[in-house]
Length: 444
Image 1: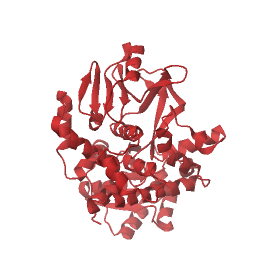
Image 2: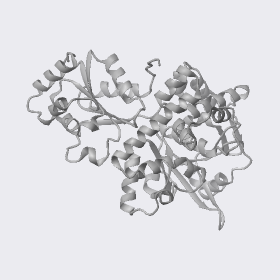
Image 3: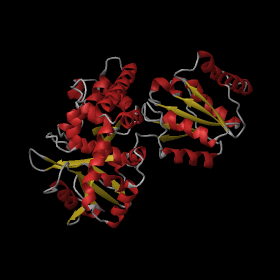
C-alpha cells in the first residue's frame, strides 16, 4: 500500500501556533485514534524545523518514560533523547513530539518545565486524553494550547483525489446563489462517495490503492474494532462500546433524543454520566444538545439530559449501520453510491451534515416541540449567527413541504436570520427558505 501524506487544513493552524507563540507554549493536538494526528505532526516537524525527535509513548521503553520522573537535570534528559533517537537538537530550531502522550502522564506534566526551559518547541498528540485515569495525580500544564483534529472534511477528501477545483467552485456558486444545473448530478454522486468512504486516512488510502469499496469497508471495520478495544480498556463491561455501536440504530428510529437506557437498561445516573463523558472524550462522536429556548447563546439553554449522538466520521457511520453483516456487501455500497438503496437514508445524511457542521467549527444544537398530542416537530440543527439563529431542516431526498421549519420560524420570528432546508437536490429557494444541496453545507 502506498504511503501518502495527505494535505490537511490543521497544518496551517499548527503553523500559526509556531509563529505566534515562539516557544512560549506547547501544542496538544487532540482527536480520535487514526484521524492522522501523528502523521501530520511529524510532517510539520519535518518541513518547519531543522530537526525533530518523535517519542511514541506506545512504543517507548520504560527507561525513556522514566526520564520525565525527575526534571532536575534537563541537560541529561536532552542528551539521552538525542543519543537514543540519533537526532541532534538545535536550540529554537528543533521540536520534540510527544506522540500518544496520555500513555506517559509524567511527560505531559513535564511540559510546564520544558517550555520554561525554552530551548525547544513541544507538540503533543493524544487520544482519550481527558479521561481521568490518564491525568490522575498529575498537574495539567497551563503552558499548553490545544487544537482539535477531525477526520478529513469533504474538501480534504477531494484534495486526496487530486481535485483542488470542486470545493472552491461550489463556494462561488453558493456566493452567487446560482444552481449547478447539469453539474449537480455528478457533484452529488461525488459527495455520496465521501459519505461512503469517509475521512479516516486509512480508509481513503485503501480506496486510492484499490478502488474497491469492500476493502475500504474492511479498513473501516478495523478502526471500529480498535475503538471498541479502547473503550473496553476503560469499561471492561463493554457498555461504552454498546453506546457507540448503537448510534445508527438510534438515529434511524427517528427519536427526538438518544436513549441510553434502551441500549444498557437501567444504569445508575452517575455511572451513565461517566460512560457518556468517556465516550465524548474519545472524540469518536459528536453530541448535539437540545436547546430548551433557542436563541443566541444556546450553550446557556442546552439540556444536558437531552441529546443526539453522531459518529464523528461518515464512513465509519455507514459501516456501523450495516454492522450485522460480516462485511458490507459491495451491492449495498453501489446502491448507496447511485442513490438507489430503498431504505430511508435520512439518518445517514443527518450524520454527514453533523460532521460537516462540526468540521467548520459549529457546536451542535437542535430543538423539538409538540405538533399535536402524538407527534413532534423538530429542527435538526441550529446555528448561532451574530444576533440571530439559523435553523436547518434535513431531508434525504426532494422536498414537498417543510412544516417544522415554517412553524419554528413563525414561533421564533424575531430570532430568525436565514432559514435552510438541506436536501439532495440543486440549490433553490422556496419563499424565504433557502434549499441547500448537501455538498454546500460547509458554507452555511
